[in-house]
Image 1 (cartoon, rainbow, N blue to C red):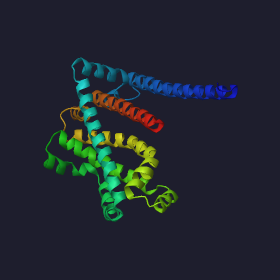
Image 2: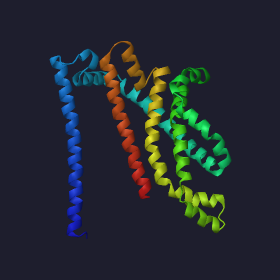
Image 3: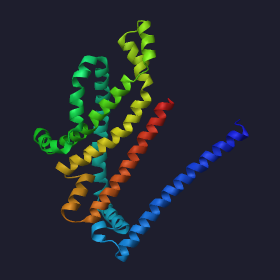
Image 4: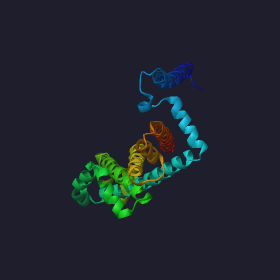
Amino acid sequence: MPSLEHQIYLKKIRRNKIFVLTVQLLLIIVALLLWEFCAKTGVINSFISSSPSEIISTIIHLHQTNNLWQHIGITVYETLLSFGLATIFGILIATFLWWNPFIAKVLDPYLTIINSLPKVALGPIIIIWAGAGMNSIIIMALLISLIITIMNVYQSFQETDANKLKLLKSFRATKAQTFFKLVLPSNISTIVSALKINISMSLIGVIMGEFLVSKSGIGYLILYGSQVFKLDLVMSGVIILCIVATVMYYAVSLLEKRLIKH
């Protein structure tokens, strides 16, 4: 049974969380009401900035024409696929680099160069190599998220406690034993935290890919709306994208809490 002081402390934390959440919701509501008011009164040009009511009408129309969930589903599928591939291959390649310090030193500048390249500039090349379809979108997302995953995970492996490494070495532990008994377990939290960055980078890569070649997806909705000057559709696509990104982020956060607790 927790002490009275501890119960008061826990209640204070819960009240603080509720207060923060309330303020966050109020900020969104006030911003939307102000946006709607300015659009209706002509303070801002509703053709350029749209309005919350028009965005809601556009989303409802997309739902009624059976286009909304199709576009969301395609973007989510492409994001999860690229996220999964980037996570798996990123951890495997980072492990390989940790296992082979010489190869890691040789590849280090190339990883930095590839990471600094503007991936959109590689779009035409990717389309020629992989075709104008989903493959190009997945490759674009992998180029953005994979290198970051490799660099973050490898860096965390390199920062493993040197004293613990020396201790295992003094006990004549093999490299495999050192990795699986010390390096990997001590960096689980860092790897899981990197997933938050990875899911965001994957979504960015998918949207960039959809801008280039897709005929469906949230990125396609935004691009099509800009081409035909339907700003309501553009803003609707942006809002939908924000919602999808938020849901994915909190899903990964929930996964992080479960894995760290385990």
